[in-house]
Image (cartoon, rainbow, N blue to C red; front, side, top):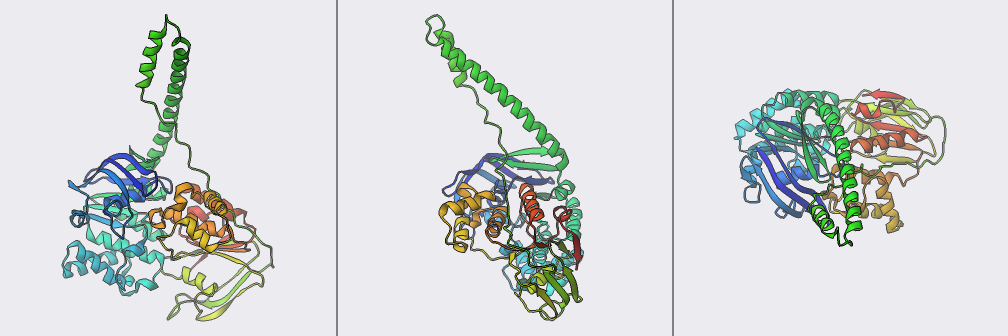
Length: 494
């Protein structure tokens, strides 16, 4: 179904992200693609869809590509893209990139009609999938008014309605609540065709993938079995490789010592030259890859200002009408809470209300005098033509170039990544750049709206530690219990 033959890809002015990659996905195979932030997982998806490379066009990302990519025997090329994309159903990492019409329903029909369905087929199939998902309410909603989770579900619903030969999903569980993730798990487990899923959600991968592709240092290694089986085998493979590498290095050193000692002697020069020729033809192993550089977050604290930093009393939130019953709670000094609830229930609306971004419909909230907020929003609009370096420099124009580089390097956006356009980066790298901004701002109250979407496990662990060590109060909106469990003092369920 899908085949990569010796594919190498590099973004402009960058080193290769993929190096001579070859793999195949056969009919009916269920594959999880894993790797650290920036490893190139989304690049694999973009190459399959013709969204990366010399012929990617304005909506894609430019770069140099070598090798051949086939989908059901057809080579991926600008000329073949229409027929290629009719075989592939895809959910991109950023759902906004798949929204073209005013409403969710119009967007679904637009996608299905372009996929080749008739108007009647498109309407019937869209209605069926929304009903199966329990998301019929999406049908009449406008895209600019729905939550990140609802946008994600709309994109997932559209691609599932297509029933394609191969499903491509880049971080499909981002923004989804636990019920939606469970539904998607069940759907994929019964999906009779092939799919390739990029995810950092290890529990999700364990339930849906029977093959794991591990992308490290530009190379993909195939592991047959579940995610847990991959973890065991991968560790054994690393240990064995390290032993083989060390043994070869000992051999090389011994041979070099022999050559140096005998090349100048007339009686043994011939033997030394023979050893040198043998060494010259040796396939030298690369040094074992070291773990990616450390990721470190630190949110500077100013000072305490009192025992009750936030009081919420009978607060009514919504736009045209209330989304929830009145909300009341008291957040005390140093407390950390997680706000939970299904998608569309009003979690982000609550955050925007208490931050003064939208008006309340009733009730009140009160910040203690002296509160200095540091906020990570779910849906910040970023200029994708901008680099992380420029992004930081625009916000902090007084920082020197070295200080900007140091700031980005601390969160794992290093070297050439700092100068690459945002549209060429992974979602995790973009998230790290946004979090880097927060590490320069002094505060005594942190607010996070879905901060772990796109982050790999190392970055999540670093973020957990930074929040845990923060002395001030914290509000976290998250669907990821594995992240906030053990971090917060209590949960507030909407």
